[in-house]
Amino acid sequence: MVLAAGQSRRMGTSKQLLAYRGSTFIETVLQAVLDSSVDGLIVVANQDVGDYLRDRLPDENCSLVVNSEADSPMIRSVQLGVETATAEHGADVADGIMILLADQPQVSAGVISTCAETFRLPARPPGILIATYRGRRGHPAIFRMDVLKEVRDWGADRRLNELAAEHPAEVRELAITTAPMPLDVNTPEDYERMRNSR
Image (cartoon, rainbow, N blue to C red; front, side, top):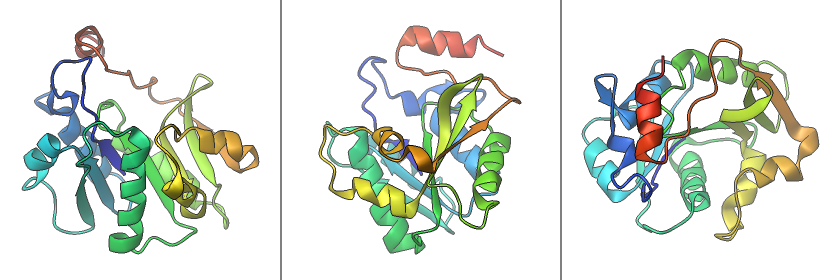
């Protein structure tokens, strides 16, 4: 699930459509997902990003959901994604849903695949798998559907990371040693820092 519905107010323009290495943020993230070992793709986008992507997504195992509530918090996009995973992808309670952010194009297909394969490895996957970078939690994160479904009735004041706090015994951390922590890009200065990074 790629969350791409943010309004990018601090950036002053749509972060998802910023140029990045000959493409855009959102297309770079989506290509990494498509090049990885995950089984499907759900994009939850705002109206502008949804319009941009409508004819750019593959037909198979891919869903585009537009969050029309412009000022809604991120948890609303997650709720829409959970509904879509069940209704259009037949997600079972033991399946994992990976959460990725459209403004973190530095997350590679290799990191995505590593997380996916680690989640699939045990007979009973962890409730929550979180990538860590030098001990700091970051993205991607994978939530088993029976855990993630708890957010369906959450209010606007809730945050997704509360699930890990509520289910500490279900959390498994996965140290990523082949890549740095993806940069957060919220302002023009952040964008310049990313463009100047390796």
